[in-house]
Structures are given as structure tokens and as C-alpha cells.
Image (spheres, rainbow, N blue to C red):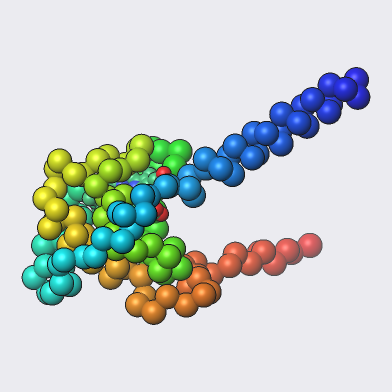
Length: 153
Ligand code: HEC
């Protein structure tokens, strides 16, 4: 049955390659979209307006504090993005975030019809307030690494 094992292994490798290429980390954004610049300034009023939209339209999945832990998050296989992840946010341009909010990707809905362009740009500024400003190479760890509970024997 050596042959059969080889076949299974090959299938496994193909599957792994496919997941690597199409997995949830890979959300392709057109280059032109990435280059768009945000026309909205992150003023206090604009951020307050965006916060209201966020709480109404996004927080159920992304969580009120942007951690991706909203009450509906557990209903989906794909975890909603964690906006407190400075590394991830640092890698995305404003245009890229704007594109993702506009287009959506299942289970995340499309917002280009529901929200005006200015509202989506305001949301981009608001999402940036969740992560600590300077994006360092190392991830700020949300929760401290789990320590094994001391064993009593
Ligand atoms: C129904 C749940 C749901 C709602 C509502 C929702 N999202 Fe999402 N969002 C997701 C999921 C799930 C992902 C991850 C999708 C993926 O990676 O394929 C995501 C991803 C994102 C991303 C991309 C992050 C990345 O890593 O590429 C942004 C930006 C985003 N959401 C912003 C918003 C904003 C702003 C709103 C409100 C206007 C919103 N989302 C509403 C579920 C939701």
C-alpha cells in the first residue's frame, strides 16, 4: 500500500499549497486601490462620526475595541480582523483598508452601497486609532503568553 500513501501525501501537499495561495491571509487588492490617498483628516468630529458608524455596522463582528471579538464573530469560520494588531495595520495602506471596507469579503458584507465614500474614509482613520501609532516590527502582544499552571503532585 506504499503507492496509496504516496498519493495521499501528494494530495495533502497540493491542498496545503492551495490553502497557502488562497487562504484567508491573502486578500488581493488592486495596486491602484492601494495607492489612493485618504481625503479625510482625522479630526475629532470626523473620528466621532466614524465611531458611531463602527458601533452600528462593524462592532458586532470586529468588537467595540476592534479586537475582532464581537458577539457575532464566533458564528464565522473566518475570524474578523483584529485592528489592534499594529503590525498588520502598519502593512496596509489607507487605500487598501478603504478597498476592503468597500468590497467586503464573505462573511464581511460590502459597504460601498451602504456607506458614502467619506464615511468609509473616516472609518479608515478610525480603525487606525485602535492600534498603537508607531508600527514596530514586533507585535504588541494582546494577551500575555499562557503559562502552564503549576502542577501539584
Ligand atoms: C459579519 C461580520 C462583519 C462585519 C459586520 C464587518 N466585518 Fe470586517 N471583517 C470580517 C471578517 C470575517 C474579516 C476577515 C475576512 C478575511 O480575511 O477574509 C473582516 C476583515 C476586515 C478588514 C480587512 C482586514 C485585513 O486583515 O485585511 C477590514 C479593514 C474590515 N473588516 C473593516 C470593517 C469595517 C470598517 C466594518 C464596518 C463598516 C466591518 N469590517 C464590518 C467580518 C465583518
